[in-house]
Length: 217
Image (tube, rainbow, N blue to C red):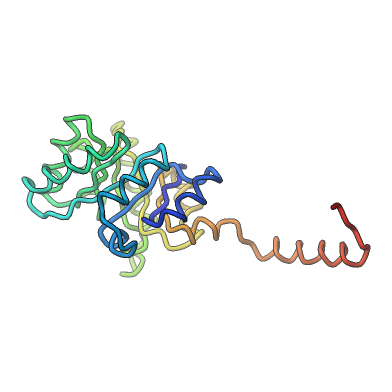
């Protein structure tokens, strides 16, 4: 499973990229606003750091303006994936951009039917939101499983990009289900390294090191 990091913070992207933990980046208007930078400027810098897809989201709601924004964003770099919402206008935009050879990430997916439409429209990525479904006492991971089944049934090439990841457990569950990609905040990716028994074992090792006076350098 590929890891995309869900942030527009350059330092965080660089740190994870240097460790080989970044296969791509996802951004959205909220993350851009949090960074405090111009969307075109920060997106261009992110594209220069990572070689994988960088999702940059349109802000219009009508298909005509979405398409114009998408084409402008796609000119930033060859690894741009234009991000559009899963609305009828978004699907129209997805179809046109995909036909033009531009990667498209269809976002805000909350049902298998929506994912099926996105695949038919030629989406490169479909982004089902796990955490937001969980917030409504619905099973976000079950949606990933349903989309995997449908896509495999018919050979759709659209990548399942699990989004709204809230925990390290979400990451491992998505990997077991067969999501192609999971996008998560840096904090969640780092949390995957944590385990209470690792900490306990390390404490024991360090106590023995101190007791025996072991030194390497």
